[in-house]
Length: 291
Image (cartoon, rainbow, N blue to C red; front, top):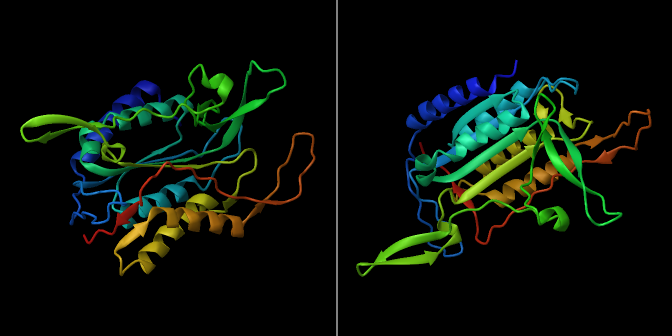
């Protein structure tokens, strides 16, 4: 059963505190020599939040939820050496609450290279009222087990008309001490938790999955990471974009799905694919840990 918000707040706060205190440091710090590569030489790999929903009010049960959690624990924990915290069966507001608590772990983030978040649930679309006549716009949303929604986007008032995602504000100004003077400079790649990885695995109505294993996207992510670990022994690193491309290819080659409507009509089978977006301006590698 879903937890109450107050109980979840207390439990999550204690959980974050307990897990992060016991996080393992990286066995080796890598300082890239290429100026076109992000620097990740912090103490920890980073925090990975895994949220997977199984039991809903009326929507189909995602009975492979535990398998998804297991796959993601292995992918981010065992393979990539993240500090992993998992949650199951959260309401929409609880998803937001858990992520807000994660964002407040400033001390840990400042000593980490990455922050990763995986949300696996049902999804839907919500229409947004537009001032322009004849314009219909929909927001993609993630469903909590209460079937309320947590929107993937963050909109301000101007975005209602422009349809542009406001995004998230990150500190990019850093203070550097040179010749006993404090110099303020802009370095977008230097802000804490230099890389943010967000993965959403959800579909409307029809579930795209491999029965008893999980959603195709997360299965493909696990396979992509394992493959990268196998082939990148010489360079001792994983290219994050190679992982995403592998993931997209696997899903597009592996599954077709049908959309069923309430009135009984069924669309022909169609291929599923993954959409990923990024704002990277340098190469992003995840160096293999030797511990």
